[in-house]
Amino acid sequence: MRPVDADEAREPREEPGSPLSPAPRAGRENLASLERERARAHWRARRKLLEIQSLLDAIKSEVEAEERGARAPAPRPRAEAEERVARLCAEAERKAAEAARMGRRIVELHQRIAGCECC
Image 1 (cartoon, one colour):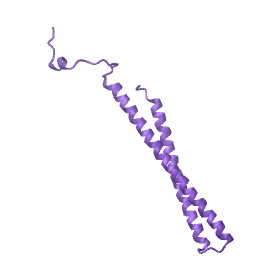
Image 2 (spheres, one colour):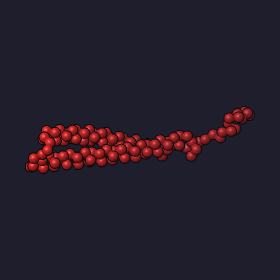
Image 3 (cartoon, one colour):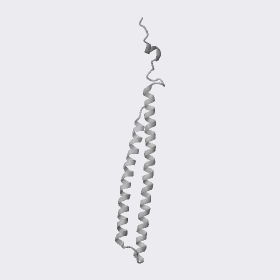
Image 4 (cartoon, rainbow, N blue to C red):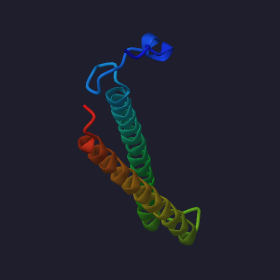
């Protein structure tokens, strides 16, 4: 007979499918991490969409003010208002592109979660 090593006596061997096995635990932790990242990405995208909505509202109010100013004499020149609208439009486009990137990231996270075979 072979003598029992001290390490073997202290640590019982775990079977690969046992609940204490590190592989499934790591998989569950990985899945939980992906779920948290997906939730954070969702809220970041939502905030960006709200920022875009705010910018669009600002553009709309600028355009309406410009239209009112076209009917009545305006205290500021038309070029300044057009410049502000153009700047707001550019910022809205930039935010929309950023929101699209976040949307793609959310889809990617969903695919990774769906493809995770750990649970």
